[in-house]
Length: 358
Image 1 (spheres, helix red, strand yellow):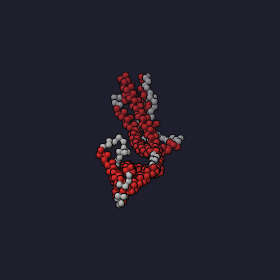
Image 2: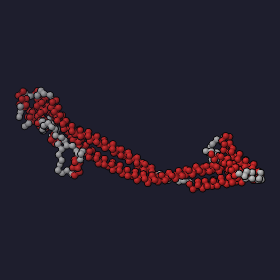
Image 3: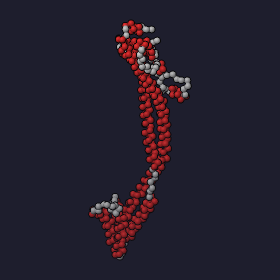
Image 4: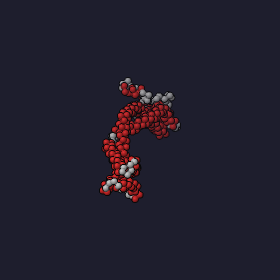
C-alpha cells in the first residue's frame, strides 16, 4: 500500500485519477518497422527532433504517478508551500521543451526563407509567362508597300510630265531650260508645307493659310498662263493654267504623303522582321528560363516538405510535453490541497504515521 493509498484509506474517499503520465514515454526511438520514406526523412539535415533527455536526473517523486501523489500528500500534511515542487516540475519540463522550442523557431525561419525563394521564383515565372503570351499574341502588321510604291512612281511621273509641259510652254519665250526648272520648283513650293487643307478635316481655313498654300502655285500658274498666251490660243492657255495650277496644288502633296506612307511601310517591315527575330530568339530562351524556374520551385518545395514534417512533429511533442507538465502540476496541486484540507482532522499520531510510512 502506497502512502497515498494509506492516506486515502483513512478517510475512505476517492480522489479523481487522471490518466497515467510517464516522462519516459516522451523519448523518441525509431521503430524497426519504419518505412524507407520515414527513414529518409530522419536522415535529412532537418530531421524530426527527438525529445531530449535532461541533464539533471529525474526526481524520484516524478518517476510515476503514485510517487507524485505521495509527494503531494506529504507536502499537504506538512506546513511547506507547494511552490518549490511546482518550480521543479516546470524546470524539469523546461529542459525537455527548450530544445524543441529552439528547433521550432529554426524550422519556422527556414520555412519562411524557402517561402520567400518560392514566391520570388513564382513572381518571375508569372512575369515570363505574361511576356511569352504577349509576344506570341503579337502578329506581323500588314503594310501597303506595293500600293504606296506604285503611288510614288505615279506621282513622280506626274511631276516629270508637269515639268516638261512647263518647259515646252516657256521655250518660245525663254530658251534656257533652267528657267523652266526654276518655275517648276516655285510651283512645287507647297511641297515643303507640313500639312494641307486639302487633306485635313475640321480645320479652320484662314486667309494667311490660304495664301501660304495657294499663293505661290497660283502666281506660278498665272506666269505660265501669260507666257502661253503669246504662243497659244486663249482656251488652250486657260486649260493649261487650270491643269498646271491643280498639279502644283495636289501633285506635290500627293508626292509628300506617298513618301511619308512609304516611310511608315518600311518601318513596319523592319518591325515585323524584329518581331520574327524576337520570337525565334526570346520564346526559346524564355521557355528554358521557365523550365529552370519550375525546377527550382520544385526543389525548394522538396526541401520544404521534410522541414514542415519535422516542424509538425516538434510542435506535437512540445504540445504533448506541455500537456503532461500541466497534468503533473494539476495532479500535485489536487493531492496537496486535498491533504491540506483534511490535515486538521487527523491526529498527531495519524499524521506522523502517514509521513513516516515506508
